[in-house]
Each structure stands twice: as structure tokens, then as C-alpha cells.
Amino acid sequence: MIQLSTSVYLLGGLLGLCLLEPVLTALTPASMCTPLKTLNDSLSHRRRYMKHNFPINYSIRVHQKEIFKLSNIRRMKLQVEGLDELVLQRLWFQVNQGVLKKIIRMMAERHPSRPYTAELERRFRDAEGVFVESHPTEVFQKELPETIQDIWDCLTEEPERVPETSWKFATPKSLLDNFCQTMYCLFSDCFASGGTQQDYCGVFHRKKGRKKDES
Ligand SMILES: *[C@@H]1O[C@H](CO)[C@@H](O)[C@H](O)[C@H]1NC(C)=O
Ligand SMILES: *[C@@H]1O[C@H](CO)[C@@H](O)[C@H](O)[C@H]1NC(C)=O
Image 1 (cartoon, rainbow, N blue to C red):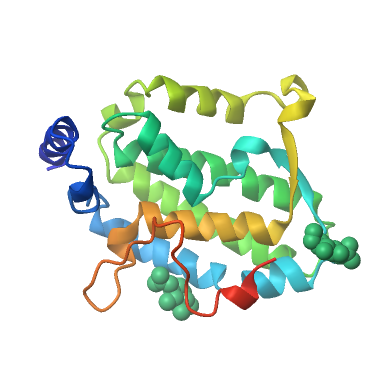
Image 2: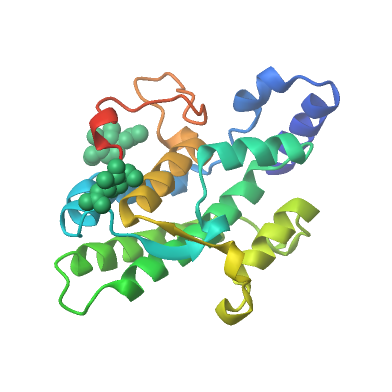
């Protein structure tokens, strides 16, 4: 099933049928949807826990590659021909594992958002567990395209070896906004509403009421 979709995808790429891309990348196993929706339920409270409980504009230091937005996904798709959606999903897990770790690490033991974040991380790990289980092991051993491998190497670099210029500051809320939007994009099969596939990967996609959620 996966192999078939992949070859169809490659063929599509060869023919330059970029417009068919959203249809051809329907690769998310159905078993992923339950844990991802549970994760989404948690994420829907992010404004309260990741903004209101912090000083205004409070930001934490993350690797620049951990600021992982829809625009980054777009760019990678343009840079790497025939990029497999599964590779991006793996990268998504890698990025957000680091993001959650950093958010938790900066919170004091008694911080009011700590239980929320711990729960979020638990749900994230559950989703990751199902993700790993629902694909053959070979998938995770496959060599990554060079561009993606470079990003991966940056993410797994020991913190003391990361050059100063690669660190950026971001608010916990903005990190979770990215987390959420990229999840809708990369696992859009699970988030189709009313039977219609929305383009969650569009940079201009706006969730209803998101405007006031920004900043
Ligand atoms: C995510 O969860 C929230 C709250 O449960 C829900 O309102 C929203 O529609 C969900 N998002 C998607 C894309 O399913
Ligand atoms: C927070 O950041 C915004 C945008 O960068 C800025 O306009 C605002 O003055 C900042 N507020 C405080 C209290 O620092």
C-alpha cells in the first residue's frame, strides 16, 4: 500500500503533476488518528496554558530548526523532489520531541502549566508509539534525503556544539501553534472535516477564530 502510493507519488513528481500532490500523499494509517485527535484536544488549550501562565512575551531558546512552520514544509517540498510525506512526519516527531523537552525544562516544578505540558508530552509519545508501530522498521532505517538529513543532524546535535547563531528565541505559545498547524498539514487525513479535505498545508490557511489567537 505504502509502496504503491510512493511509486504513484514519484510518477506524479516526474510528470510534474504537483497539483495532485495532496491527493497522492494520503499515507497516514488510520490507527494514527485516535492518538493525534487526543493530542489535538490537548493542543486546543494551548492559549490558556502556554500564554496566560507566562509573563508577556516570555520566550525560550530553541534551535532555529525547531521553529518548524508550514512555510518550512513548503520549502522542503520544493527543495527535495518527490519528498515522501513519511519523511516529513518523522521529522515532525523529531522536532516536536525537542520542543516539548525544552518547554518542560524551563518550567519550575510547581509551574501551573506543568501538569498540562506533561500530559501533552505523554499524548505526543503515545502518538509516536503508534506511528512507529504502524510502519515497517525498514521505513525508519531508510536513508533520508540530504537536505532532511542536514536538518536532522542539527536537531540531534549536542547543545554545546550548536553554534550561537543557530539559537533563536520563541514563545512557548508560538512553538505550540507551529506544532499544531504542521500536525494538521502532515496528518491531514485525520483532520478532514465534513468529508472534505481541507488544505491544512496552505500557508494562508486560517483556523476559525485563529486571528485573536496570534501573537
Ligand atoms: C482540534 O480539537 C479542537 C477541540 O477539541 C476542535 O475544536 C478542532 O476542530 C480540532 N481540530 C481539527 C482540525 O480537527
Ligand atoms: C511584546 O512583543 C510585542 C511584539 O514584538 C511588542 O509590540 C510588545 O511591546 C511586547 N510587550 C512587552 C510587554 O514587552
